[in-house]
Amino acid sequence: MRWLLKRTSTKAGLPPGTLQYVGEERAPQTKITLLEYDEQHVSEREMPTVSPGLELATEPTVTWINVDGLQPLAAVEQLGERFGLHPLVLEDILNTAQRPKTEDFGSYLFIVLKMLYPSEDGAEILDEQVSLILGPSYVLSIQEREGDVFPAIRERIRHARGRIRKMGADYLAYALVDAVVDGYFVALEKLGDRIEFLEEELVINPTTSTLHTIHDLKTQMIFLRKAVWPLREVINSLVRGESALIRESTAIYLRDVYDHTIQVIDTIETLRDIVSGMLDIYLSSVSNRMNEVMKVLTVISTMFIPLTFIAGIYGMNFQYMPELQWRWSYPLLWLVMLGTVVLMAAHFRRRGWL
Image (cartoon, rainbow, N blue to C red; front, top):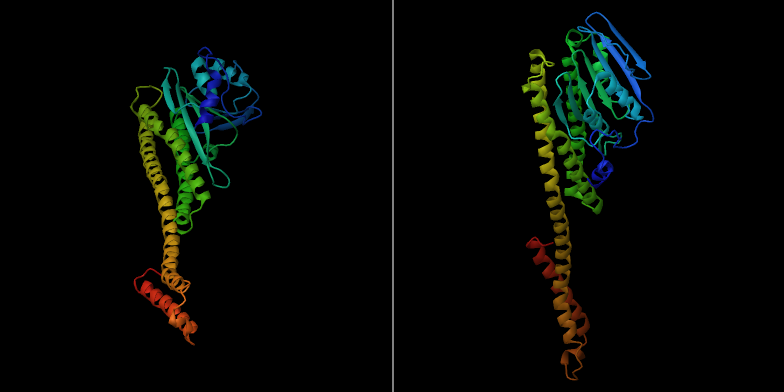
């Protein structure tokens, strides 16, 4: 969280609409892909820039422009100039610490999402901001770097699978949002497996590294909650909004995404409760192990109390102690001491203390 606040502080004092990239250096250059399709045809190509004179096909042809990388800033500026985007929209696109939200500008809708996916080793959840612009016959998707959760959508468009080629730009925007939400389930599944493994470790052999892992999981859960909770409001706004860009036929599918969002939120809350309880389990496990050690030490100390008493008696320097002159006094003393230890051990075992 400190890192998040630190990177957003770079914009302090700047006037609204100032274009400044806020985030990690993820993409060395911008990659722009244009995909146009209708029910009969589909075309796909890469473009070096989005020129102000770029002509878009009208309905029923849908244009999907995907931008990977937010640097250099000229690419985002050209995008805003060609599609008439508000300067504050461009500012939010470049601010990768933005919370999920949606705004209606009349001629287009602006949507911000957090795309989540597990790392290669599954040890953490990585995030990436995705900005969507929905227009009458086009969709713009702007990402921090190349690589996303949209390959299945591209394949459906290329091979005319499903109904996506028969629907408009609003359905494409729904498909992109749905793919992002489905990615949450994959990330949470990986996280759930990690939590399950950690629970077994907590019960069997908790260590200091286990405590560090619990702290790391709590931090990830806080981030996940921050990334997903506003999404419910975003989807609800799209479903219940009065924008003419979203048809009623698409709103039905958006309601399904809303249901999925609620499921994701419920899963996150459940995992948060589990992780929060892990600290109590860890403290209890450590305390139980300490109690076992103390019990063994106490039993050993208790066994030595009568032996110390006997040794103390015969360690006194009195001259007249008749048993000291007995021939068998030394082995008899050992027999008494060993017998005392055996009887006490048997008693402790019968009581379940050993």
